[in-house]
Amino acid sequence: MERRRHRRVHAQLKSWIRANSHEIEGETIDLSAGGAKFSSSRPVELGKQVMVRLFIPGTDTPIDIEQAQVQWIHDQTFGVRFLEIRPQELDELEQLIDEYIELDEGGQV
Image 1: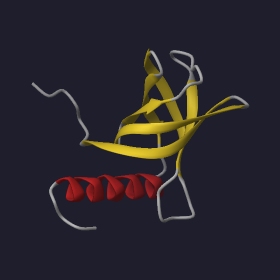
Image 2: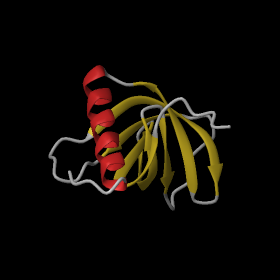
Image 3: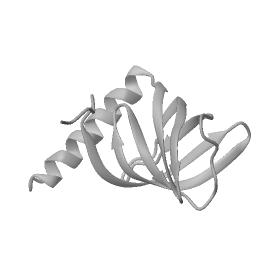
């Protein structure tokens, strides 16, 4: 039985995670409106509150999620839960997820 509340898509996006004054460059592996899975060679701290920046191909403005929390860590991957996201960023994130779903279903964006 699926427990997820949000649609999740496989999405490889350049991303930055900021914890205090440290920025970690990584790649988004999958994405939903409630959180994301990342890959990075730099370590993160379990439970740490972070800011997430997602770089969307074809746009000049990244999606910034001001408050997220590291939920789990495994090797060089980790998951974050989005704690606070502004309505405009949420709209952009949901639109991006819709585009990935459409591509996955064989449509064209």
